[in-house]
Image (tube, rainbow, N blue to C red; front, side):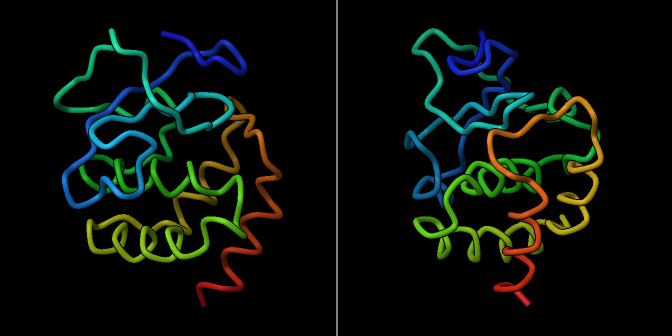
Length: 131
């Protein structure tokens, strides 16, 4: 299954009940391994019980932290519209044992990732309103 924007691979994952308000679909989401767009997966997409986000980058946390971080990254395309969700997801990522700033730094250093938004600018903006 490929991204409709850049045609690269997608990671499809189940969204836990308590995080569904942050997902583009209530139960599932897909994250592009290259452009980092969060989207609704195709109806025939296979969802692994244990999603491996290392297909996106080794910078991704594992387990629940990876799911929260994927939703967090998927909201970075519009800080104005998603500020509240970004703040909540950053806190939830920390609760899940993931450091969203460290993961963002590592993701920004990954040459295989080419986000559809200005990654460095978003990183600085997020740091300013979350600190």
